[in-house]
Amino acid sequence: MSLLLHSFLILILLSGMEGCHISDKSRHESFKATDCMPDRKSQEVKEDQTGSILLVAEQFVILSTDGNSRYLACNLPETFKKERIKIKYSLVTKEIFPNERWIATPAYLTKIE
Image 1: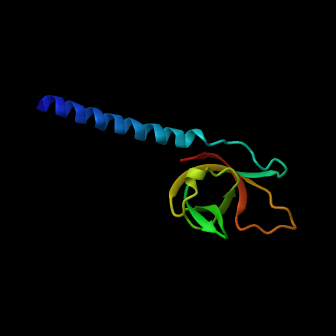
Image 2: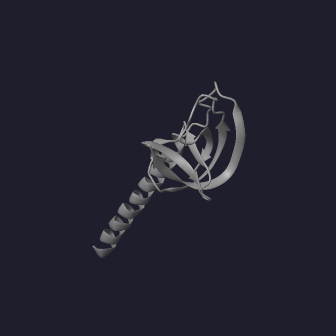
Image 3: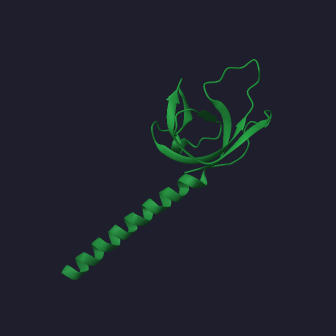
């Protein structure tokens, strides 16, 4: 009887772990690394950067680790729209037209984790 109970508990534990693995995988499947600002010229490529998410004027922006750069990514996935989470990312910055003011440099993500 005890062996059956232990086997049942191990089965429940393993199935719970598999559920966590699936949800983590689906988090990354929703990300699309496409240029969502094709009307603007690409300026600079930033590869393998680290930073955090910051809420500025009701917009989620990426703040660089050194605090000197902010990026407004047009394709930031919903799962990353949480203030103060740490991220690793790659992105392409886009131009700002002369008659505009932005809260952060416009960009689109090519990678985020």
